[in-house]
Image (cartoon, rainbow, N blue to C red):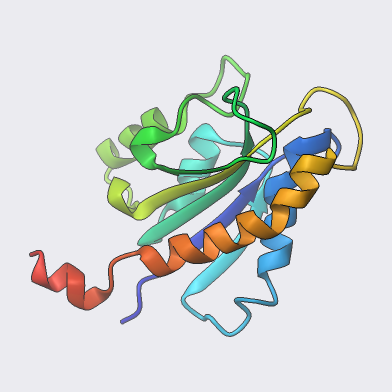
Length: 165
């Protein structure tokens, strides 16, 4: 039985570069249309809601904007342990690592940390309203699409996982 993979783009389409995760997932739809083992989705929240969205999947790739101080348009490839902070600024939510731990303690069927990836584009502007990306982020979209496809291909095959058991 094929492993189920969720590719989920996060962001706000009304706040400049923050919507890049949503756009990348849109770009992936025609490229992955024949992959019945992959579901493409978008959402506007991280933390607990993102964890809940991952329930029932074996693998997940989160696609989002990020600000680390790197050059705008830089593509970041992170594991679950490497995701730096919470996405939501709300005091009523938690970061993804904490949300995943909470879900696992509740015995939710979630992807193992080794099967969660984040592909993020270094954003230039996530504060100002606007539906256009900065030029560097716009130019990074095709590179981020390729990074997601690479992340999908890099997951261990079922045969590899059986050998490691």
